[in-house]
Length: 145
Image 1 (cartoon, helix red, strand yellow):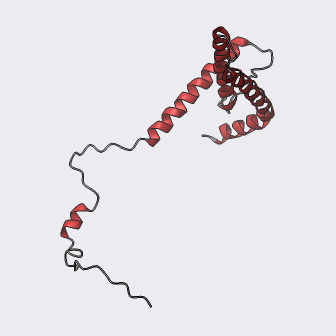
Image 2: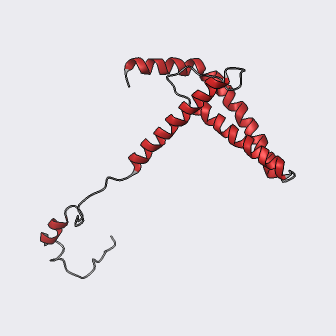
Image 3: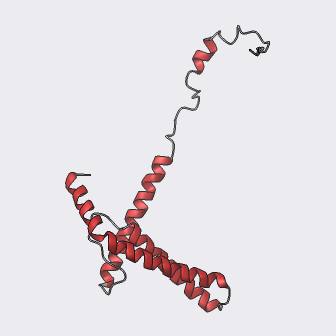
């Protein structure tokens, strides 16, 4: 990342920290309420479906606030703003999140070795080493002091 981009990210993170924090807290509270309703068991099948849809939407909103691009001006979800712009930013956040997850998955996968007969490093040295071959097979006796 360039120095200019780092400065922009820092400025936006400072500027929108409080707004994102409050939105995240509101969404988390709403999510807990919906989860409690779903776990109570007093709901009809129609109400269960509605609350599951609410739960999915709130989870997406929570991801939106948490993974919003640091180099963009934050578009609030809870204020009355342009729904088209919010939909566009949600797509951007989802794409960036997926790209980050793919990068992490690639980092975690070990590099594939194409050679089939690959042995442990230093295995050819172990064959030539006489150190253990000359050792007596009797166990060592530990003498207390």
